[in-house]
Length: 119
Image (tube, rainbow, N blue to C red; front, top):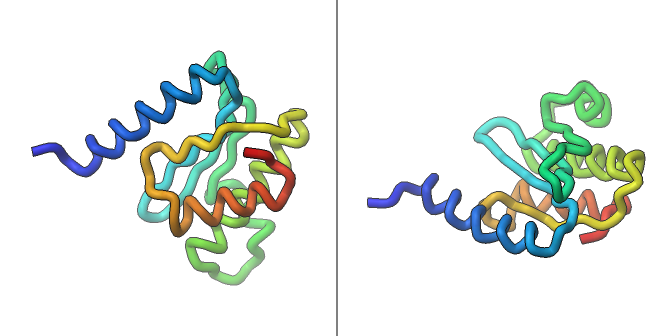
């Protein structure tokens, strides 16, 4: 029997093959049960910018109050868009790493779009 993780990795592998064919920067998202991570990776597999829910800059955006996971994902999306602007990257391909496009992944993507990242 194929596990849930193996299925996700298979979906991610197909999407990454297509992005590699396009030779575009990719916004790669990973989520765990507690945190969410985002990084922009160049076509030559070098990480250009990265942030996560553990990043002090994201915690500064959120403030002192405890927020829900979707609010944290929105803050991570905003921060990764700002880091992309600093690195002079406007257009990326969205790599959701096999995760479904809803909830935290969708919130991160929409927040990155609102803050100037084009994909």
